[in-house]
Image (cartoon, rainbow, N blue to C red; front, side, top):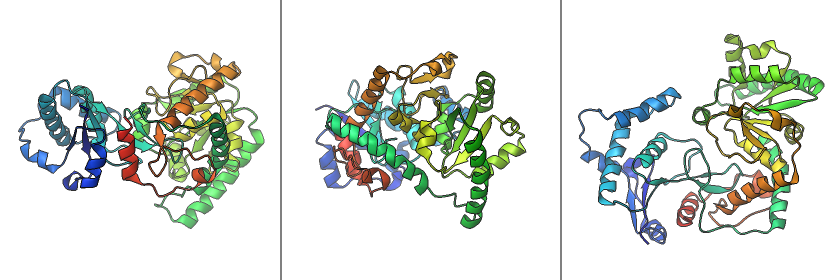
Length: 395
């Protein structure tokens, strides 16, 4: 066993492991290295003159993600020192926490892991809720584990049925933004939903669904082409409606005000409409012609419904190209939308979902698959440390 692992935490100053945690991780790793404030004392650069490191900051700034330059240099100094002492050794880097968003330290360690040829992995919540996996990069593609969750085809088919049924509840249980008075916000949203849903229900016979994400970092990472430009292309190509589905936690009033203020042309076309927290979400998804995917987990979840997915961003978040089900718009080819989904296409989707489920653990950190609807409705209190330890030991 020659594997080594570097662990870091967003609270680096107080980051340490208990003896029991170290013992658990040493089942799979020869050495565990922690990144904390002790390493900063050794850092004494007076000038930030590395083009390679400055470029990391500049590249992220272009997509509106601001990284601390000093922290880039500090982490680089730390990793460089480890690499010099461990040439030709397999070294993993992982956060020792699970975050809902991608934090600054994760961006920096990921970028520098490529420089020093180390394997970055990231414990995270899968788009299949209550399943946790290791992502092999910040684009959320899962890392293949040696240890697997084993389940039968019958269990998989049961999970699909119950998971689809539970997706409606995800939508209902989300809370509204906290920065507005809840009562006023709910009243205004109900009024907007009445207007928009009435229009949608009355006129929408054929429509495509674009799921808007409320995570700025993920939207930035996907490097989506200009949404306005894409909408124009869609409206010129198709004669049916384009429906924008807001994330339940998105401040839709603020968003719509911004679009009106900017005189966005979305509001000048009768071919577009907007929804948030709609009734019968599953039917709305199921009856759409296809899903437009930027970076949202809901659009990835539509794989359970065998929906065609059009990737809008330049970097694929959550999902990879799966035959004619997922197609990148860069190919400039809409012909796949006219094809019917065949049995072989569904088998390929199932193969991808089975691979993801096999390489993930439940909220207790166990390599077990729950199939009951209950486990996909409620957010059970997760055992975060056990999840991380078992995923890292599954490598």
